Amino acid sequence: MTHILITHLGKPRLPQGVKDGPEQVRDYEKAIYSLNGNTFETPMIGFGLIEQVKPDRVVILGTTASAWSSAVGVCMNREICPIDDESAWALMYELLPLEKADAMTAEMLDKLSAFLTRWLKLPVTCQQVPYVEDSSRQDTARYLKALDAVIVPESRLSIDVTHGLRYHPMLALVAAQYFASIRKTQLEAIYYGAFDRQREGVAPVLRLDGMLEVLNWVQALNSFDKDGDYGVFASLLKQDTVPDIVCNAMTRAAFFERVTNVAQARQQLTPLRQHAFDESAEPLAELFAPALRERTDWVSVIGRGNAEMKLADEYLARNDYLRAAIYAQEGYISKCIERDRGNPNDFDQRDEVSKTIT
Image (cartoon, rainbow, N blue to C red):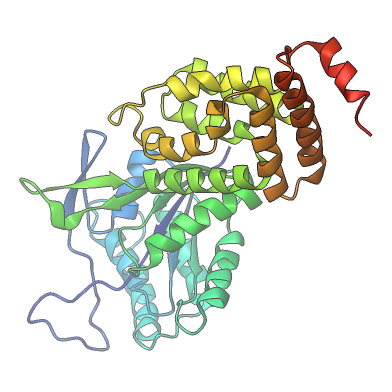
């Protein structure tokens, strides 16, 4: 799978006392960052991450006013630069007036892409994305379309949201979910270099992809509420290191409930209902445990007939009329047998009662 590093480019502040001008380059402040025990120094964390995560491709996202020229500055400030200074300066001063006028063009970004590709010795695409200002829905769609143009289906994505506009991290979360569904991509990580959290001169690079995992849980809950399939929780529980006996039982519970085998479904949900979730070891599962127990409350209903009637109500609320009707009928049969102190799990008794239903 192609590994793509996506990094956002914003507009760094000028140092205090420095006045802006037509030829004034805005550079990010150089800092030492730490990721997975490794430290690296860079003014633009995206360039440092290239050496850390070893992507196959790099995509730099920015607006018409982003400090694209600062990317050239990073090249020129390195000890070894395979491109002569004159060509770098020429490109920088072509970019400067356009970014200062909030008028960067696709043609100039193509030139910058070629420059960075030669310098980094791997494919680089500088892609312009819109501001989200006039219409949130329309501009978000345009942002995703712009990114879609440079995303390879079924690729692995690492997303850096350190620089860029303040709302870009939210767009990154949306993009991660969108491309996972539309292009079958796999999220490796969402990185944020916490410059203001420096300790002893080193800034940590934080992983924000746990936020996306919360959204995945919310999406799974919505999916379950729609169709009643417990199976959507199995992989999420496994990712949160919940024991296999619970995860695998969820899949089996989904099967038995959907074929209207209440007794087996109840048995398979027991490990979930009895499991004591550990907040430190299973943080997301523990967070969503009350929601899971609420959605399996029918297990605690006394009597098979009452349980089947409760499930009939739940499937009716989901507009699943076939299962609602089946559970209502099975519930009626069970309650008739229970009223006469019979065994509602005895097939012959159920068959006998069913023949009396008109």
